[in-house]
Length: 433
Image (tube, rainbow, N blue to C red; front, side, top):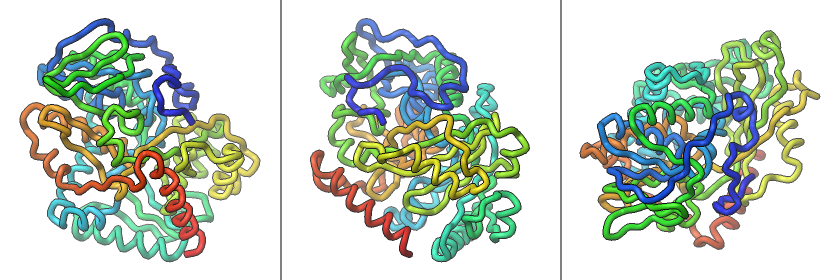
């Protein structure tokens, strides 16, 4: 796990199967001197690049400042699952904003998945898209809850979910661990680093300027917004803050609403097409419903990509490789003894209720954060929604702004220990219920 402070950041892409499976790219030039643009964007991940693509396509002058390389953070090393919805369930959205806005927000999330698929086609991004995702319960109470959630989505949200009993699931997923599945045919999975690099290429082709290896040191707010770096300042009419878990005190009023959480992914050796497809016959992505969940899928070169575990203390768990291998073997006993060729981690940013946190700090400073581990489609959507607002059409953003937000208790010093204690109780709940 990498520290978040910029002075510790290695600008090279972290070691992962994702980084090893795409062609190397020369870094884009760092900022050198001052610039004056219409929109300055902090962060070269899904959110920032999505916004840059949209805004440059509208003819605006856009500059993106990325501290390391495009996709260096969560956008280039996540589980690759492209899902409708958000990090929270729809009943949480209904509790926060009522049923009408909850339905609207969920429909927006469907647009986010469609947006990703459209961009893959429109910009010819070679990122190995595969449709299909299954949420799988381990315990009877989880199966009952998941079935009720599916019924709500089908009946009240007109979403085409399918319920698979244990036998049907086993015909697609060769694991004895699960009791059934809620199958989503519209969600799917992709190679996230290949996708984010393709998104950067599309944004540059539209006219956006991207500076890599250019960490932002300060958000200047008056008299006009600007992003100050060690090598120059980008002055802008409007600014988008899209640093998520890696802001490092750039905007303290945003950071107190999110918590960086470590999560980890491993990749097996190449298993061969026949052996890999015997594990997941329809090539869908899968995630279980534990609070500290496992999620997994096949890669295009016939590996198992297996994610799981979480660290709420900014340190990886002791014996991480062994822990991840045992979790993999618990799901697929037939892989017992198969090691992990790669193992990597990174931070996701969670909110207290796992709902997204998007909006405006001032009339000319926008932000999006709080994807809570559910960000591939949502972050692409956020960039588009904020680009619309910058261009004068803020209707969709205003719905997100109606989501109430709560800061994590304990302040900068105590919020992590309090969260660690809370997560320990939730892990215990998963074990005993």
